[in-house]
Image 1 (cartoon, helix red, strand yellow):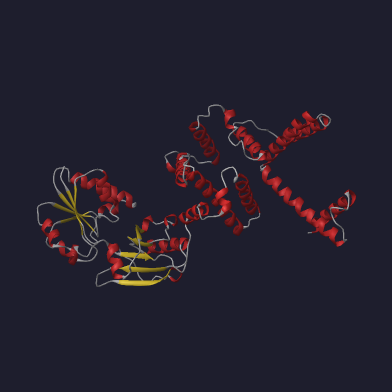
Image 2 (tube, helix red, strand yellow):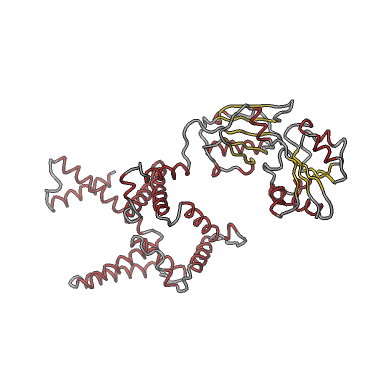
Length: 476
């Protein structure tokens, strides 16, 4: 196996080609070039036989496949001889084909050159306190890091640039400063600086276009900041209440935050949903912080575990399995879930949501047995069952032990009826509570109009007020 000498062409023109590089090219090694789009190549091809690999870009739409094909091709070419591979900029910045060859432990030599990121910072006269560089095609809102400058390279057409700006406006404040630079260091250099919210298409990008997103001037908190805040609250100089908490003491808070989120969802209150999601997220971070302090696990273990679980349980998304219906997805989810937990009996599955509020647990049990065909065939059948359970409650009124059991059976059957009709009992009961409170508020308003204390009026008057509030509701 021969050596592959990887040479960086730098980020400008022939002036970046050193005497050392020219000497290496003058030998008898075959020279391969990643792409013809580089200013220095027009001069180099006058003196050297260059073999361009742009045909891989024409064959493949996915840039990752292009890198794989280039790496494999060069490996084959170096099978019996030494070769040279020329890349734009530096071999160590955004050169994934080189990275793939390194991972295969091929014999690679290097002559480094200035990367585009260094040249861009120089031409923009920007002293960075830290930056991250990434390809435009790799950017997503999930990769935003507000503590660093962000340099985005490989913006080679207008569509990529426009899509990139849209994504950035979804994740950065509109006031964030940016600099778009084309042909850095060349006589054709263009620079456009502004704030994201003012962006317009003043520069038409080419393969030598980069976008610098300056660290936001206003404070934008990230998930890492939330973790640091949680750590501070639990630290020596933190909040006495937060420091005192443990997993068990926070159980009620966790339940309350979850139910407050459900309440916001039920009311279609988007702003409150956002706030309650934050409160629930804090519960996750503080529980994770407590576990970290105990030496049990960290928030990163939590994230890794749930991410691995999601990928493992969605082979129809992340693997080769094809599932075209939600019902099939649920069946496959259950199959994967319980096989990984060594749950071999179906009844064991019914205990899976034990610990939830009883209406949720009952609904989950009914949902699972329904999926295997243990269900009512007609609405009349389950209505008759509700009536039967009600009558058994009436018969058991004089027997406290039997009455407890029969009341439980009646409640379970009502949950079953809700499921059969396509409703979730927990949500219906929540709505009923809200309705009752609203009606009781009207009762109290009417009592106050008569200078009455609702706690002192007695049952008959309460009934009158109740009926009055019902009529008021109907008018409303």
